[in-house]
Image (cartoon, rainbow, N blue to C red; front, side, top):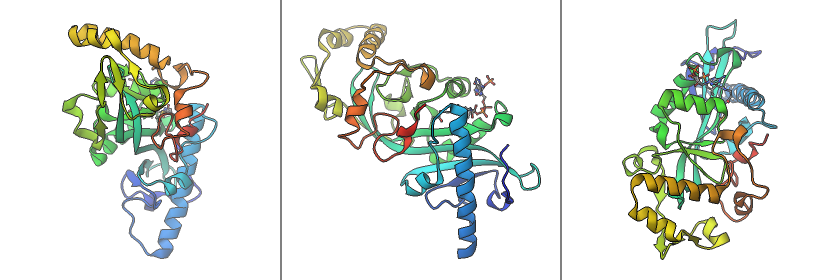
Length: 297
Ligand SMILES: CC(=O)SCCNC(=O)CCNC(=O)[C@H](O)C(C)(C)COP(=O)(O)OP(=O)(O)OC[C@H]1O[C@@H](n2cnc3c(N)ncnc32)[C@H](O)[C@@H]1OP(=O)(O)O
């Protein structure tokens, strides 16, 4: 548990509070002086939890800081407290989410631009309280508040623990390989799910004679992707054949393991690194302006 030199309880009238760029709990009511006091304390809480999260994940610097939250337009942090702990209460967990514009591969290897994709950016429960259901409690609160579904969440470079968490609580195991650090689960692009999560997906623009043409950085950098016989074969073949061939194609395209931050093999020069210079869309760990690209071990 994480305790502070001040009493955290007035900041947590509810066990879980939401904090956005004003650095105030969503429950906050008060005058100017109280507001300054609350933001200063909230900043300290966020910075401390952010540091602990980074240490726990083996990151060289925090993904989450109060300063970054203050500068962000569409990020929300959920904080979980135990107001019964010690004299001043304690904070036990943090979950940061946001909407990001992402270029993503779908199951067939085609690039899609997904605007405002619901994204899980940082998630931490204090070591003394892990595996006790607190992560699930925070995550469920977040899903309800944001009106998201687990399947529509893209996850920024998940740890093995978080992959296990998704598997256990939501049965999400099979991922769609990407060239960036985000992990998506199979079914992400299914029509039935596309209305959930507020993401707006742009379909691939054209497939002509096996050439896949989009406005994405992938196409801008490397030209149209030649899918050739493979795509025709997949059109004709059964669903299973479709899956197998697209998996091979995806492996060739991405050359990256889908298994989280520790398992991922990183190409010496990723397309995303090149793209980050020319596009505002995130292709690696958050991309321009987001700060999540600092997910560096
Ligand atoms: C985008 C990102 O933020 S990636 C980084 C994610 N954060 C981390 O890896 C930091 C360290 N880990 C944690 O803070 C927590 O374990 C979280 C946030 C991943 C999950 O929170 P918890 O409160 O532990 O989750 P909760 O109790 O609801 O669910 C438990 C399940 O999560 C997974 N899990 C949690 N801890 C572990 C662990 N040490 N080893 C393997 N799986 C784990 C398991 O599936 C576990 O179920 P099980 O105990 O039956 O095996």
